[in-house]
Image 1 (cartoon, rainbow, N blue to C red):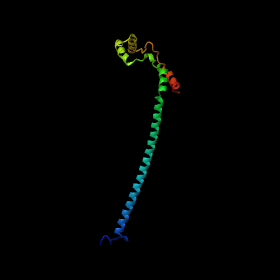
Image 2 (cartoon, rainbow, N blue to C red):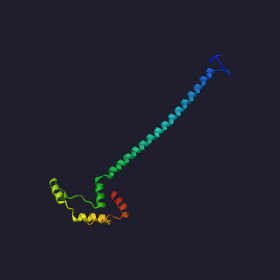
Image 3 (tube, one colour):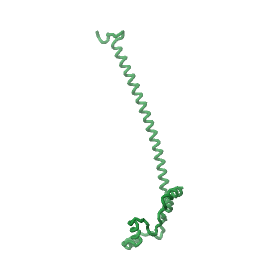
Image 4 (cartoon, rainbow, N blue to C red):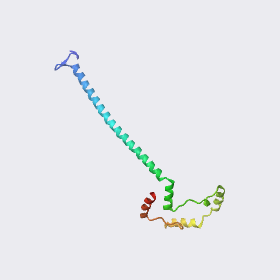
Length: 146
């Protein structure tokens, strides 16, 4: 008997092998399609996350641009550090820099006392007002940020 003519319960063995292979192929294609669908869903989820992160990046860049505005920084420096623009009479030309470096070789008494005050731990510098208390700072920050 050959494989082509042998029968099992009325079916040729070759037909049973063909049907078995067909079922295996159908199950394999179904599993591949199912896995591809889950991968497609994961890709779509990740693309949505990328879009959300890009929007967040744009928002943070806009916030940084707002926080770095020169006018805002100037207002904060005046409000918290009591800083002011340097008057034109305090600016030095290139020729005056050499003279200033020679004349400024010895530190002034005010600079020495300021460094001594910082080193001794008191933190009080003569001629400079103390910073506002910590509980007043958040209210001032909200006020200045507007």
